[in-house]
Image (cartoon, rainbow, N blue to C red; front, side, top):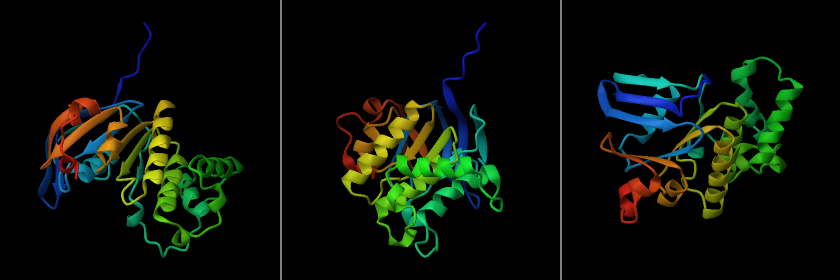
Length: 233
């Protein structure tokens, strides 16, 4: 009998998590589908970033279980504003850091690594910025550099915390297109977002409020036509 892969990348069962003994997430049970884009929506303080940290494995649940069917180490993309602009790094060096998980931070990259770094920069449209320093880039360009760094990890699980926050509509759409493309290639994408239009472009959606999951399903089902814009912000 042919073995079919689990259609879910991650199963969450009654997951509660928080910091310093204070819970932020309460008994979240949900499924993250494989090779799709899942949007996490909800107001500030709803637990989106905490859930991403749990999915990334950097925060252990205080209760419940997380079962991953993807063995790859997740690639985690933070907001560009979370990266100090004073770091003396070029775009190429920033993207090349995505290979450290494979080669180690103190080992020379191989030719194949450099080719992959170049391909990732080209994919997100920043190949011409390779020698530029991060502190000379716009917010959208820095966000693309961080996305290219994540792509260089070649992980099958990509997690993003508000990747389009503070960007203009053109930059937001460009990042959304890239995420859709890589999910079609088999990568599971989970992104926290405040933008309902961005969430509607996803294929799956989780709606958090006060640390609890209040809805899960397709964006049409979760967001609908009548969800007020403030519900996701």
